Amino acid sequence: MGDIDPSYIQSTEHRPNLSTFVQVDEIPIIDLSQSNQLNLISEIGKACEEWGFFQVINHGVPSDVSKKVEIETKKFFELSLEEKKKVKRDAVNAMGYHDAEHTKNIRDWKEVFDYLVENTTLVPSSHEPNDSGLRTLTNQWPLYPPHFRETMEEYAREVEKLSYKLLELISLSLGLPGDKFHDCFKNQLSMVRLNRYPPCPFPDLALGVGRHTDSSALTVLAQDDIGGLQVKRKSVGDWIPVKPTPSAFIINVGDVVQVWSNDRYKSVEHRVVVNTQKERFSIPLFFYPGHHVVAKPAEELVNDKSPAKYKAYNIGKFYANRNRSDFNKREVDNIQIHHFRVLD
Ligand SMILES: O=C(O)CCC(=O)C(=O)O
Ligand SMILES: [Fe+2]
Image 1 (cartoon, rainbow, N blue to C red):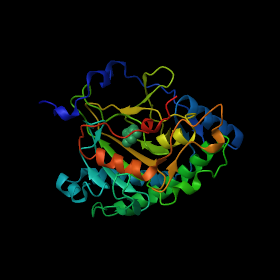
Image 2: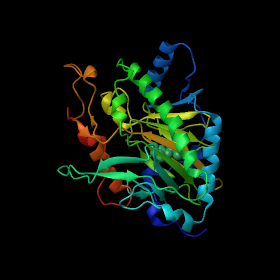
Image 3: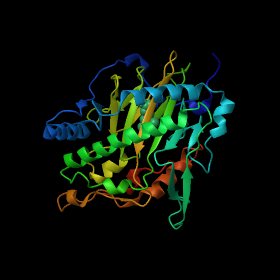
Image 4: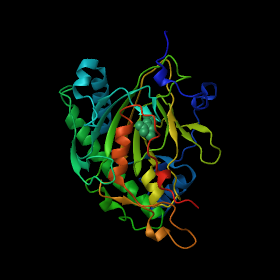
């Protein structure tokens, strides 16, 4: 079996307890096709408040589009490493193939392919606060498999529609206008990530993705039937596996919604455990505002009794800061939204 590369090893307190790994279905499942809109909004609000996570069914994304994406994803990862590395991500272009992702400076047991929902978008040239320059970020598309690009673009368009719908429902559930945040997604930095978690001989030491919150506004995740995603239960702090539900999407509140909602909805920690037997695929779309957006608690939710819990921060700078940190292992902690928290 050999030894594990030390860069993958989680510190003792963050290793998964595999003996208690049971599939329970506690994360709410919400039917988006229900005709009672008020009920739907209230189910979404409750799930966001209690869990920060829920699954949606009858969501409108055509099943053939999802199926095609699964097939193309598998075909891409089956290519030789040499072929995949023709579209590898580097320090300048954050999009493409990558097999050395780090979460909290520990290497994840996975390989990924990232692409932007808008094929070209603008990001700050650097994370430096005084640098107001912008640069263009463009997707890298592999030559093989031949239908990869069109399949991925079609998928992104469909899941983007669902993301806008969820954003509207979440806004309404906070008592805000449905279109409150719509314009924040002009020039969006949203990205789709194809994740492949290979079987791992050391599932007790490594994680597919270490514990983290998503820095998006919200995340719309498709997973296969293997399982491995775990969510930290808000009330108790233990790790709850998200049982795969056929053709459902898993939705989670990201850091931006936590800030917009002034902490009513929390961006909840999650992680992925791996197993010795089976590879697993998952596909999140991180629905992410444009670089120009200044994130701060919605003014309707702030008053004398409930003052703003966050200082305003620029989405583009946050993104630029994060993107330099997951490419290489760094000695300092990544930027997090709690750095913008107003101290009580
Ligand atoms: O693979 C999964 O189920 C979740 C992946 C994840 O949390 C992420 O990529 O941010
Ligand atoms: Fe995540």
